[in-house]
Image (cartoon, rainbow over all chains, first blue to last red; front, side, top):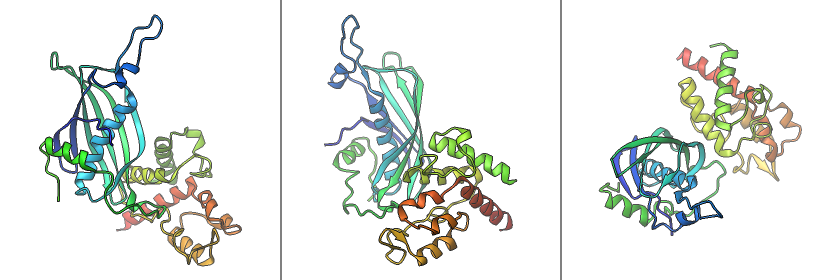
Length: 170
Length: 131
């Protein structure tokens, strides 16, 4: 099973830009461990930064994969930069905006902006930047052969795109 | 653009791509051994050099590709005479002199120096100017 760390794709400019959102919820069990009450310190349920990076990786990965009609197995190869100014508490919406910086047959580099949107007042705030590199693993330099079927973009990704109203290239 | 200016820009690219300090990026520094580059970093470096200098880098032009998988070029973990000739012909920007004395494939990373990248960029800029 793949964890999905985005809930909906809200905008897609093919091969250029993708915007996706993630609603942070107390129904997610890991929030209760991150961070649980400890001694006199009260609990602080916030989404771990590593999962926010994964959310951006899924957003940018879909953007790159979609641009190549999901023929390539696009995998996250490098986190070039990741900054986040504040925690993501339950009840906010994270908005990921990924843009393609460069793309060719071997892979892609993307730039990403992280914003928090407060549903209570609609205000949004830019809180971080996540720049990534993706490799198309069938074009890798080590000559390793991978399975033919595209194990990266499975059914869950397709469902996400369909429910977001994004056409899946055939 | 002078060679010093190219070196300075290549230095910036490597600092950014590899997270190293400016004083580590000397002309003689090897990308793998001294600066800690891994295979994916080569792609990152190529992307960043393209953006910095405004030219395209075709796959396999700056760093070798396919040599390790070709039986003509590698035997028992060592690059053959034919492999060395291929590398020198395709990659004149790198100096294979030292590597030739013990051409173990595992040690080919020592050939990829900062100076080699500067040579490559200098040649590409010359080609662009003459085009």
